[in-house]
Length: 145
Image (spheres, rainbow, N blue to C red):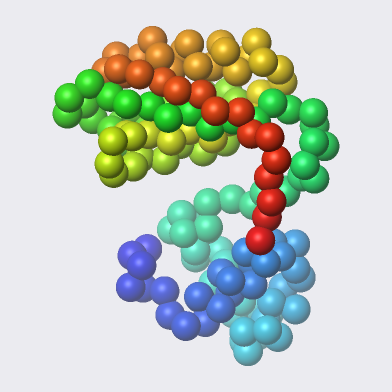
């Protein structure tokens, strides 16, 4: 589904789901001014089109005692950024991998059990073909808006 195919009701529905993905269909329908079945159909359509790619749980800081960090990855020359970003995103411990512009090619957000697991993940990324440099930064605190 192309971005242009989302109408105003779809955008309202997505905003509501981002605020509370556990909201009932009845409350979502009421919020966007549609019937329950029309709202459900829209959600299914957006899931099938991969506009909605899943639902997640936001944990309290430190709930799992995980070591969180960011890694910046710089690639050699004109290596295929998006392919490598997608590969890294599939690694255990990687929450998100972002393909960037500028002097940093890939930003990796990760959460692992301990410092040894973070070092292991860093080493795995550093050994990939095309990777020139990996820098790791540990998260001291996080704040959500």
